[in-house]
Image (cartoon, rainbow, N blue to C red; front, side, top):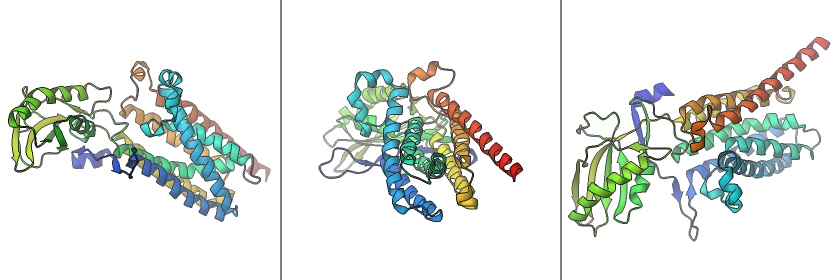
Amino acid sequence: MINFISVLNYIVWDPNKEIFRLPFNDHPIVWYGLLFAMGFIIGQQIMFYIFKSENKPRQDVETLTLYMVIATVVGARLGHCLFYDPGYYLSNPLDILKVWEGGLASHGAAAGILTGIYLYSKKKSGQSYLWVVDRVVIIVALAGSFIRFGNFINSEIVGLPTESSNGVVFTRALEEAIESDQYITNAEASKPRNQEDTTGMNAPVSLIIEFDPAVDEEQANGYMNQRLPNILSSVSSRAISHIIYSATDPLDYSLIPKPGQGLAAKVMIEGIPRHPAQLYESISSFLLFALLLYIWSRKKAGTPEGLLFSIFLIILFGLRFFYEFFKENQETFEDELPLNMGQWLSIPLIIAGVILIFRVLNKQKSQGTGS
């Protein structure tokens, strides 16, 4: 993955997280939500195939899907609220219900899924807890791939600076901060295409700002010399900074007249190339999905119970622990910890996977000896 990024040098990434808005609906359809839903929809089709291959009732998949959807959303939301900001949400419990405002934790989703499967398996004969979990983790790995790609599109859970010119410069937060000003109609950051003066800049970013047609040249100059430097500084001072302000002071910019549309301004600033940590996790989760599906396909109903689940725990959360070293902490309190919250929560799941896989292997060995 890193070599791929190296070939492209740095990438300026600023897609709009919204796809479209429905009439009379204040909450837009966003890429994260769409990919989250796709994970369940495609996963359900795979489960239909698995259940059919093992002669299980098709309608059981629909029941299991319902359990999974509810358990995932509830677990992920509660996990975020209780693991990352318990003080706020315990003081404002109704805000826990505001899922549309963001805030879902994969470790909470894991706890929710395991609970949901337990409740489901108690009502189904011939489908033990481990049998169900082994098959569910196949589609969970796929869903995780979709979800992390959604995080990438939304510029969420960004990686740490790469300390090189290779990586991804996330600029959507800067554009949104600029566009929130009443004088601005649009802000667009991009990688410079022409041979412009970028001396001393590791990852130059060309920023085009379009003013409201009512803004005159004096007001535009005032914005560029006073308001914009403050915005650049405020964005770069956040706990999760997306871009830094290292241009000249005052800014070296040019105003561009747009006949019939007012003025635009062009300025060069320097971005921070970061690890696309979301892509690291997305690609890894997809490869894990392919591995689990392959292992299941070899023996299907004869797959040792607990084998797929243990492999899932070890690989997914082992890589999660590793990838956290390339990611920004999500909350400021994590800066004081030797490991961040994602790593602490991954450790017991990795240990559980190791214990389980030894039990599976020992059981196979004893059965082989007995035969």
